Image (cartoon, rainbow, N blue to C red; front, side, top):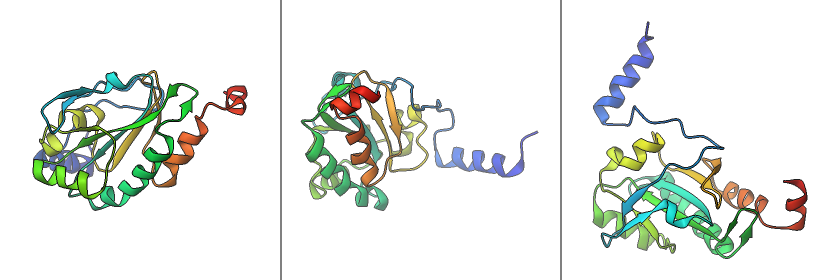
Length: 178
């Protein structure tokens, strides 16, 4: 028998259009493919970034915690974009917006100085295909993947992004202990 609070949460999620059939994406899994269009209508695939460390960042222009986290992402990007990692050369961010208004999405990218080139959105908000695929129920949410596309960390915040990236740098010490 389904417990009443869980049933009510499920029904509430359905009414809001939140994803309820998402797969359970976890550390150690291969990152599910994302193929979305950027602001110019060009399709960008996550798999095109193989060989790099990539932070898949689910966010939205209307999300205050996302916008507060963006300066940390900009700092990590600037610091690690050309770094050699144990299993990847360079670092980038693949931003997946859950916006439904293109103007708001593009303004936030500009206002927050999000310099990396990989910004995608299907402008379907919570009904976004990547959000469903990854089981996103709140933003910000992120997944760090290595050069082979394997998820190595989930839901990093603030300095955790840089600390985790630093732990994967290609140093003689890291090579010994990995």
